[in-house]
Length: 476
View 1 (spheres, one colour):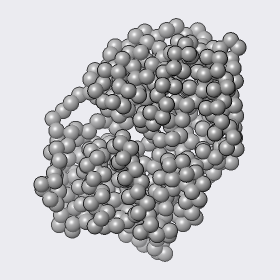
View 2 (view 1 turned 135 degrees about the vertical axis):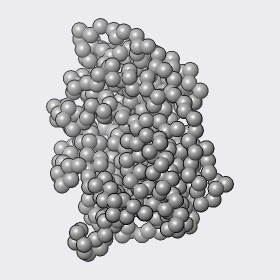
View 3 (view 1 turned 120 degrees about the vertical axis):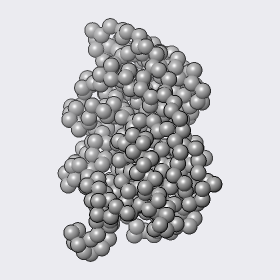
View 4 (view 1 turned 45 degrees about the vertical axis):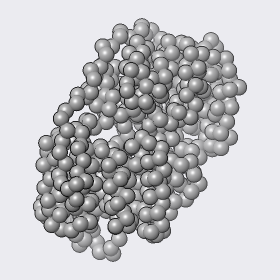
């Protein structure tokens, strides 16, 4: 970065830096850039990338049409970048990924285009994810080891690949280059989770966030700290973070924290409102993404809403999408069986899935909760040796593993999670089957540089409140 003071640097440079680092200053700076240079198509597109989830389709379409018009006048690279933003903000992830392959072939290591590389993982296709990883590696190599954005993104890829030592070293290197890299801090959080991070790891994140409390990933990094607290047995701190750092809309992170607490016999933090969860499931986006729906199922499990879980499982089983029908449905049924005190049935359902649980979406840290659930069910079904084998890679490689140790503790007698959630709780009333997602007419895309490549773009689903914070270059 430039040696000039922040006030001397152009607002465009400061805005892009804030966007790449996921700074809490990103939105004011992007708005300032658009206001000071309304003819910049790139400025307008990057603002849409950062805030598009909050805009309705008409506003998003209008803003990106203006951005594309202005970008065409600026040059081919700018027009290509804005077109990629259009596809990404409309959640056309396969088209975004395909477009990025062409874009990077012409403009290697383009940092602004790198903000959209998460599209490869969002496709939900293992071949696309692998292609995206390979593309990321090539771009990082071309950018060189002194590029903190590309070193940060590469650290994230390595963490998700399970190459923990490399991820840790890359994240530390990126933070040495640029200490405020939010992507690197997040990649380090993932690597530290795999290494069994405890209080020291949480303290690092607290210090890092203390310098920018409004950082884009503030709530999500606090969730990682809650997991560190679980790993070292500080359950009160895990509850405190869930209650104070997470918003009501953070349904997924709250549920993931509470379900883990319940699995090890601990009281949960403040819970989600079951009515809110039912509303989210009934909303147009309730079944739009498999991982989002899984998070809502976890929220129902925390409430021991067995009947609601069975309703959701039947709906997923009838879904035409394979990931819902073949993976989500049995996982939700397993949650229902556990809340009803039938761990053997849950064991059979989850064991049959095996590695297919990866299709539930999310990333390694998030999917690990399925393995936690299976381990608890195995112990409660009288098979502690199988449970210990399932978790051996964690109990032997992580510095702190109090949480895993407690997953392997037998309950005498084995108590269903329903009793831990609320001993006096009565079975929930069946929830009405949520309405099918609303399908609206396809939106038309602004014409790209090559009009023949313009796709038909379906209407966006609403922002996903159960996912980790959206943010640009989501490095989960």
